[in-house]
Image 1 (cartoon, rainbow, N blue to C red):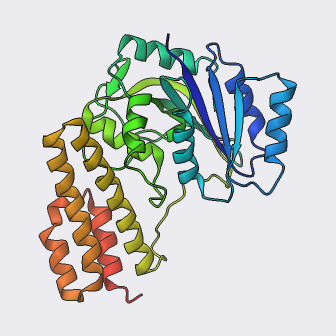
Image 2 (image 1 turned 30 degrees about the vertical axis):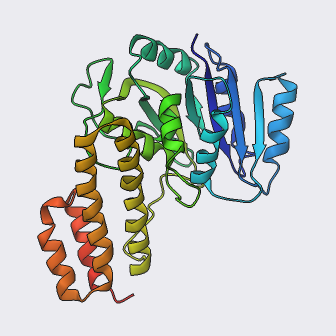
Length: 315
């Protein structure tokens, strides 16, 4: 029998949680556990959670508290570690401000039962803007096999997720492998890591059906651009270094799993990111030489243009 846990990260979500909690509680197929971790909220989020759990007699819902504010990325890392102490086979990531279709768990479970090799299963979703009241399909990656029930991730070396993390169902074995290599000093996004590794292992899939709604309200923790044109050169280089860590972890996990060919592919991209970072402290002439030399390694023109712009910046 497959057992599951919902992993919910919260922070100052007192006024956002009700719809999401209701959509989890009312699922047609119940998760065996709901594990909540609060990131040192300064409002009444924790009190609200405890009251909600008590009022609905939710004995399998557990709330854990971070000793200090560590951010949503490391909170999800800790939630994944929390889940390993439970008797579960899969986890569902959950944000505090989205709404699930009531058959989300049921439909994702059905797919992994039929396809047990799947380690990451995302799904489609739509977006509601609370200011404009507009509801639209998410403008995410479009799979070639969109007309099929499920689509396999396209096996590319990238740290970009095909769908937002709250759509992800993840197998325990992948979390176990990842937990051995992801230390708390690496502030990385959980959904990007599991997407990259499952993609390269051929075990990442998308269920081509809308099973949730992402609520955009202006205070979302995810979805904000990390670097803009107004950012400093130091911030630009810091993000490149951080993104290099995705490849470093993927290499270690893939090597442990015996994916030698994929390891070499990731190493090539990791080395490209290292060169991008290291060239940030050299002369402008050498910087442009690096950009031209690695021209074909760039994933697109936007990244090339970004490196050129920041190469021209003094600070």
